[in-house]
Amino acid sequence: MPIKITLPEAAKTLVLNQSHGVLSTLSTDGGFPYGSVVDYLPLSAGDVVVILSELAEHFRYLKANPKASVLIAPQLVEEDSVPQPRVTLLGEAAPLPPSDSLRAAFVDRHPEAASYIEMEHLHMVQLDVQAVRYVAGMGRTGWLDPVQYREADIDPLGADSGWLCNSLNQAGTRTLHALASAFAGIEWASQFQVVAVDRYGFDLVCVHGPRRRAVRLPFSEPVADRDQFDRAIKHLIHRASGNRAAAQ
Image (tube, rainbow, N blue to C red; front, side, top):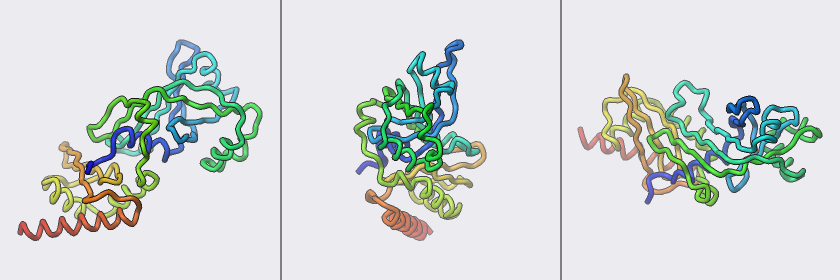
């Protein structure tokens, strides 16, 4: 059994379960990258759709050069964001013909858009993904094959991954230390942070002063929802307690 999902699966899961990113286009004044935060609608194949005004700098720049990128980094504003997963989608962007179904999907994702999405000067623009750079934050990084990215399955825990990470982090230092000790042999760490969760297990960063190590703690079998996740965590804690008792 794999101990973690593939990079294409991880990247696509992140894109399809988030809604905000940083769109960058190339300015017409020197060709410098220009980035700003946007809401986006993910499409099933992994492309993304944004809404731009004809008056927006991005729209003007894209008319001159369709090359663009979207950075999706959910934990960007957190103090310790470097270990966290993020993905950059690169490709060419172009306006889409009017589509009631896409507008409805965008509003479903971003309810506040209902107040402006019908304005005539606004256009839905799709980034056709041609390259993907994924940083897992655990020493796993790379350029992904766009075909493999498009064909990748998304992880069943993706929609809940943030909540599940927080749930584990709130379990407390003692519990996370017991897991790190039992399954990774780490006794020295004093701080712990769960940075990613998927159906095969979770990634844990262990820290003490300047020393830092990232470890993978796998489940005994894949999980598909919150209930199975809870049972898998309880099983790991039970095993960790048994290991500690046997060592004493």
